[in-house]
Length: 508
Ligand code: G3I
Ligand code: 9MR
Ligand code: ZN
Image (cartoon, rainbow, N blue to C red):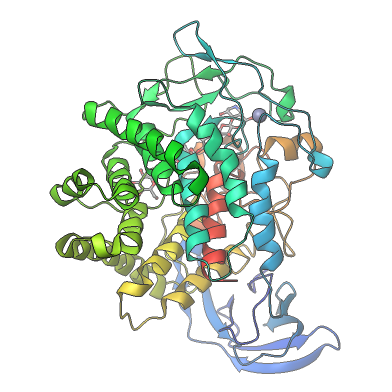
């Protein structure tokens, strides 16, 4: 196993460049692979006791190496994986992260090389507890499974659209990519205005089955408040990206909002007893309602949404289970002339408080990430989300720390500069995941490229494969590239969207 860790996709010539090396060697060098010539010799920083990785390490700064080329970094007789210095090290990755949403399409014949397949999940779905059948075809498969769930869908759509808006070099085809999901989301709205939590089979079926081979009955789970609120948020948000569809989107958002208003104390979503697919039942829906009000205010300028916000609390979060920061971003970036001074100040304060907390963890972590030792299911998303928080807070702070740089350091972690020298995206770099928990990949014995896996998860009891391979590992090393490890090696649309956001907003 490697003990010298670098970003396996490399660095741009002018970037700050840091590697992590074992504590026992202080000196290090950078070798040009072409001729094995040493181009840089340096002295690493002091020893860091790094408990999340169960190791003692040093940070090796080689920023002054700026000439384009292919290199390895050597320390104490050990070598890193090779990496390049070039203008656009992350271009291909960015394209693949977005292309993943094509591979995840449901309900349509799919042309995508080895993983091509005829239309899947095309039968009508049964509304749970009734005989009623509905067409809810389309949308993206959530993850390694074939369920389609509103709550994570909203995060994925929000990440992608917001990235598009904030990127200095947006991908022109992104709105077209995202429309596929929105069209499905619209079908999930009930005539009551409420939105069904999800559609899937009753249980997870075989891992090695292609999408069209999953033929079991589809069931539409009940309406939930959290699904309805995030749906209102994301359709209102989308209305500014799709002028031709703005009326339809806003009307759907308005009906969803009205349902929420009529159901202020709706119970949190729980899987009915006969359904065991992804739950996505966050404990509360207050943050989702907050986000919806922000987006609806931005989209309509109507006073009632502003009043709702002024009277309520501020929420934060960019995960599927906490979404407040999307609301803050909408208000701070888009409400502009129509914003309220006091509310603006409260929102900035909430955002900066979170930002500060993450920054503190960042400044004490040699790998330049901000999880401390809290590596959980989907830790890679939290790494990307924390970087996104830095980027969203950028305009509102005079931090001494360069927030762009902090975000970039988080990217280096995800692309290989971590205690396992594991690049956490399939098909890229020297040591990518080869056995992701992703049904089409498992069915074909070949991973779809450009998929972000969940990453280290210290709660090893959450899946048998992780338990078998990683019990006793330190948190940041509790990851196994095993196709059955769904709690460390699955993929999801909202982990891809989180990394896409980071790369696109950094303009990489
Ligand atoms: O409750 C804690 C919270 O206090 C803490 O701040 C936070 C961050 O560390 O962790 C929180 O709990 C985690 C929770 O997700 C919310 O983020 C749990 O430890 C963790 O076990 C839980 O994992 C979720 C998992 O389903 C199990 O419910 C993942 O986020 C979620 O991505 C995953 O989703 C599955 C779907 O059900 C089915 N499809 C695949 C998908 C990905 O594996
Ligand atoms: O494949 C499922 C994955 O998408 C989920 O995240 C995970 C946890 O809910 O469950 C996976 O399905 C497994 C099931 O829970 C237990 N039996 C084995 C299944 C994997 O093939
Ligand atoms: Zn499908």
